[in-house]
Image 1 (cartoon, protein in one colour):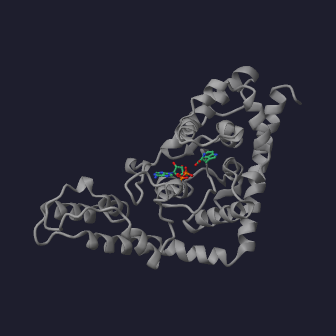
Image 2 (tube, rainbow, N blue to C red):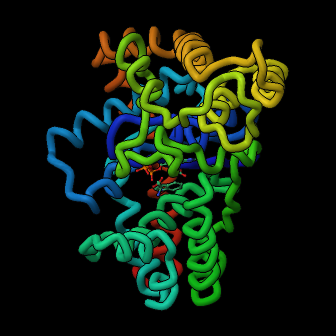
Image 3 (cartoon, helix red, strand yellow):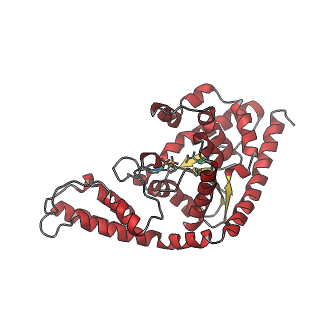
Length: 327
Ligand code: ADP
Ligand code: TRP
């Protein structure tokens, strides 16, 4: 049986980048045959020192988001990262077989340094904690966005080093990217990569006036509708492509390219975009409201998930301790 595992940081409300790049494929895969573990990476979130109350709220919001988008907790194990402290023990065991050089090569760490962030040790060793997350559950497949592939490859290296020293303890995981390549980098309202840290994001459950306001912020130019235009350079079309059926998308592109009297203006596209986003997320928004109204049920789901996840991680931890002579 194939074991799937992935996690997402509770670093704020999830946006379209998180949805198309990560959450959507997690939810879709979770309905396939196999074993599924999905967790809210709250230990990881500490690397950016969030306010405790905020962290508590984001953890719940992220769990609700998974469930509202269709993750079935009967079929997939949904849990909080920190409910499985055994992964921090595994992190130590893996730290002792990991060279500094491996971590120093991490793109995401280097990017953060370049942006002027003062790193803490946690941020530096984050790939080891992530490797422990993956290896603790004997994951075969790790569905992630492009920026996380290197971290999964590091987990492969760490598993290999440990196994070479102490025998076959860890299972080799493989990363899996979203099938649709254009989902690897969802643009933000300004055309740059959508990210919470750039303030160019839209919350997946945004609706009504705030949604209209967000869509109005999508950058356009001042060319009139009659001008024939290359669809490739039009950010609004990039957004429409995410939500409308392919035939409708082709039709928008054709009309934009043709120009003339029947050509749509940016206002038309914005109106359609708001409408289709509202429709796309309407069922999930309704489920979110139901889940928020029953916090005890959410607690039960997360506790049940933690129990199952912990049993699995404990078995791996015990295996690893025995192998390296600590048992
Ligand atoms: P943010 O940049 O908003 O803080 P994260 O780094 O927490 O987002 O990303 C969480 C997950 O969402 C990762 O798996 C990442 O690959 C995916 N992701 C984030 N932004 C995008 C984007 N703009 N396009 C595609 N995937 C994204
Ligand atoms: N690092 C991932 C992110 O920032 C979240 C994460 C933590 C993760 N541990 C993981 C993803 C294990 C996959 C597997 O999005």
